[in-house]
Image 1: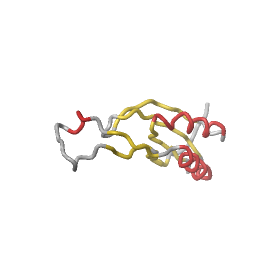
Image 2 (image 1 turned 90 degrees about the vertical axis):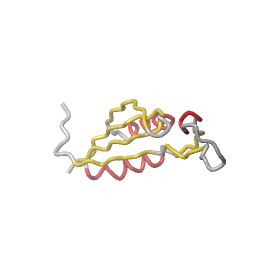
Image 3 (image 1 turned 120 degrees about the vertical axis):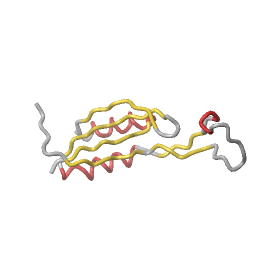
Length: 107
C-alpha cells in the first residue's frame, strides 16, 4: 500500500532535504509553515511513496535534518524570570507522519 510522508522540517534544513529527495528521484511538494513553542519557520514536505521506498525516504530525512539549539525569546516566557527558567531549547530535526493511502495517481 502506498504511503504519504508528511515531514515537518526546520526551515534551515528544508533546502538540503528537498535537494536530496529530488536527487533520489522522489516527487514532492513543499509548503512553508510556522509553529511550535518558538513559532519557528518550518517547511512541510509531502512525498508520495510506494512501500519499498519508505525506508530510503526516511533515511534521507534522517541524514538531512538536525536538531538545533535556540535561545528562547523573553516574551515567550510570560514574564517569568529565574535561574530555573530555560533560556535555550533544542528543536528542529523532523517530525514525520507516515499515512497509508489507497493509490498514487500521476496525471
